[in-house]
Image 1 (tube, rainbow, N blue to C red):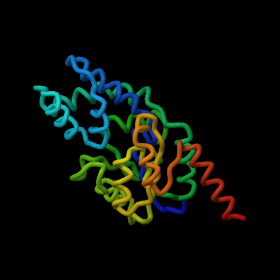
Image 2 (image 1 turned 180 degrees about the vertical axis):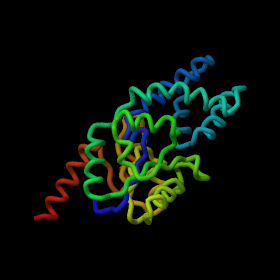
Image 3 (image 1 turned 90 degrees about the vertical axis):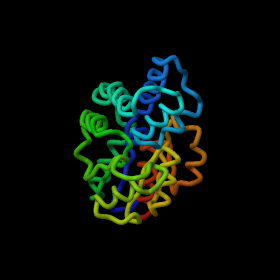
Length: 224
């Protein structure tokens, strides 16, 4: 699309990992005799671990510390990320296309390095990234532009030179507020907010293969 930089969310956007977190939410609360309320996952999706842990403790009246909750979540996720979590269909081809075109690539994620790096390694794409940024490096979560602005800074680019790829509404809002071109990538776990994502995003697609087809078609028209 002619941008110098591409900033990717990981979970639910490049990585087909949201099912792992849904299972963790269910299992974590079930171990405490609790069910997952309908609005709980929506509430914590854009939060970093510490804030999500504090919210969970307060909401359910848990006695654990936030650090203990985060440690348990990480322990539950580590094996799945290192071995089972795969890229979404077409994601590798899209990353390869960007590298061929000389686009600089960053990740902007709420996941901890101990999770996302093993997942990227076992999928063979860690080396595609020029920079990594997590929500723990910025004061506010993904409903705000902070993480995308820092990612662009690490790439040495301005917001208007970058596209941001996200599967959640909060991410699209944050990217738009920061002056980025926002691309909505469908994930079944964010289906409840897809229509609003489509309304707000500059471009929305059902997956990476559709985006590749769209960009190939756009390139063909430009060549003609």
